[in-house]
Image 1: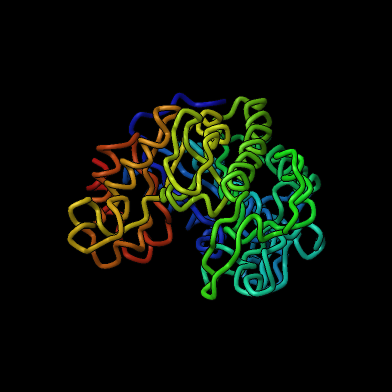
Image 2 (image 1 turned 90 degrees about the vertical axis):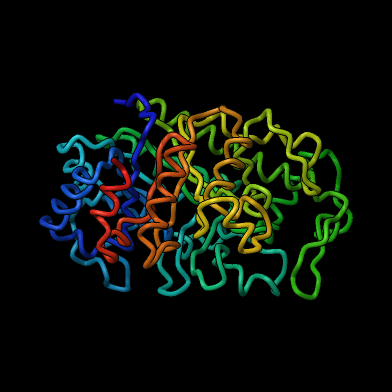
Length: 395
């Protein structure tokens, strides 16, 4: 059953890769949920599909985390993390959202994931020069393999996973990594053909008419760049619409997580703004608003992942812009979303290592300016011993 949105949601993320070994012990599950309730948490996000394509529950469409060749999670063999954690959380009055990492389907480190069974799914990068360091695509040392969002088999795969997840006794589904990896992908023949149909023209010089790369792999815009950016973002929106239909058919809340750095997020091919928002940037087409997806969501969370809490702190530390702070990131997110959907600011707890007071200030900023706070991730509360710090902040 879908829940009525809490105007002061305290959302705790439970990442499987970080917490799965510890939470294989039922006593640790009980301890976590008990501490979360005591601290004032209202919602938990439970991983259903991790960034490497495996599911935390038995799936007809994906391998199970217990089968990961690194052997880290064999204690979950023939078990269902999603069900165990959801059952316990709901017994204790928590609202449960299941998280699905959408277009990430493998890991280059252990060579596991659906991407290795389906090499034709892989994102194709602009050139070999960027592919070697962009296969992961998220940050320089990541090992995630992304797949092409417009490949029909990929879309069916992800929708089938979401459909399975929606059968659980949960309150909502969160999409994460529902995006392209970065600005360098996807440049496959499928993407070229589909883009040419979108603009009604043939690209004569591919991919240079989209963009060229400088010696430092920086991007110089070609004549079709802005339209390309619009098309990529529209691809993601159209998938989100399909996913929404699946989730809403089960009466569940439909949520999305994204980074808050909107002026740069065109790299990932996502326009998480309202359709009414005018993106006044050199990379944006006049019709970029057609790709805005905020209206498709029941709730949006953005990661305001900065150690500086206030705009004044960001300026004092010579940050490039005001939105390199929790306050500025929330302000930007609110402006971009334009009240199209409820919004929750998110924090990365590692930003506040050894700074519990700054962590509490960041929570207060999210609660003051958004519909609550999202906390990533549970593991840092454990490592830092911050449950009492969190409890004090959430009062």
